[in-house]
Length: 91
Image (cartoon, rainbow, N blue to C red; front, side, top):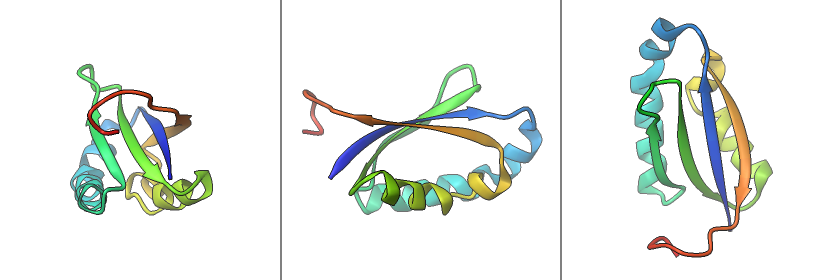
């Protein structure tokens, strides 16, 4: 399994994003329960968020992201980076 740090950069339509947010958070919570999301949360300035995923590979991760309600709503840009975590309580 690979780990990915995914940054979401929120788009300008805050009202639309907030309307979709409950579905997005429910989806993320389901991924937490499955062990796919290790950490998630918005930045304090509300310009974006960071989600740490564990997935087989980037193609699998892209399928997971495609199923996130934020994706079809087009309210955020997703920036994916594979992350080689070396230390921490997750390891």
